[in-house]
Amino acid sequence: MKTLKQVVGIDVGSKELVVCFGKIFSNLDKKLCQYGNFRNSDKGLIKLYEWVQTHTCEDSPLHFVMEATGVYHEKLAYFLESKGCNISIVLPNKISNYFRTLEIKTITDSTCSEAITLFGLERNLELWRKPDPTYKRLKQLTRERDQLVQERTAVKNQLHAEQAEAEPNENSIGRIKERIAVLQRQEKEIMTELKLIVKESSLLKKQTDNLTTIPGIGLLTAVTVLAETNGFEMIRNKKQLVSYAGLDIKEKQSGTSIQSKPTISKRGNRYLRKSLHLPALAAIRHDEHYSNTFTRLVSRNGIKMKAAVAVQRKLLELMFIIYKNEQRYDPQYHLQKYQNEKVDTN
Image (cartoon, rainbow, N blue to C red):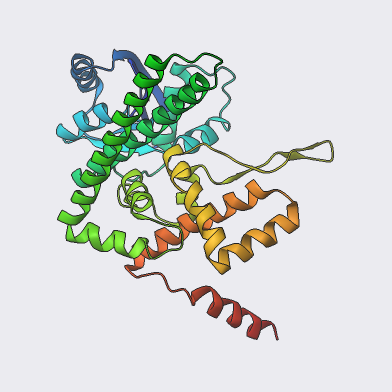
């Protein structure tokens, strides 16, 4: 019987790679053939690749499938790309949703690799491409800055607590202030480097100039969104983008007895969500359209945070549209849309 496709599903961890090798045949039967465990290290990647070659038949395509797991999958993806392999990196929420459809009661690394393999066998997945080096540098810098800001906040809280003591230690206060100064200096260095990268690329400069015309969106937010989405490389529509950011709505309802409040899934890129929090608040304060949207949503459900998240979602979708259309933000767009809708209803 002819083999149509071969898939290597990999559950990626920080130290271990749990692998399942599967095939789908011409009668559409699926078979999970081999299992393996390898270290997530240079030697482990070589052993994994050699192991796969011993089980692969030459007459059908071979596909490697894995989840996007922070940064732990990147070393594996880069290694396989250097070998000329077909690679697909799937959003975690897609795998988890698919997992629920399977008759698997126990969740382990092994069963997760099985689910990834079956998902790859059943679906026609898009091939992953190595990220643009510029976007990768931007991601490294924006994430480093985020860590610095978190650390600086913690140190400032420590300073506040030390100063509030009855008999504060002046030497301790001095050392804490020195740490704060170092963190502030490093943050300025990162921002300078980010601006230099943008300035050196005419394409990136044009992209960020367009994105920063959106109310509340500054240079840092623009480069963070571009870096975390690799220039929206893997994004095909607004719904997929919202899901990737974890801003999609999750609710549970069954009959009349089970009905939970809708919440955002948060099963996505937390750096995207975090980068849009302050811009959304700024847009609500300074832009009439987003202020009206916020007020309308708060009057409907009474929850300010829920309304602010809705504005975050709208800003992210608008950034995607602005990027794809290569246009600047038109402040009259929402007014014109509202007037057109009003005319249509009359």
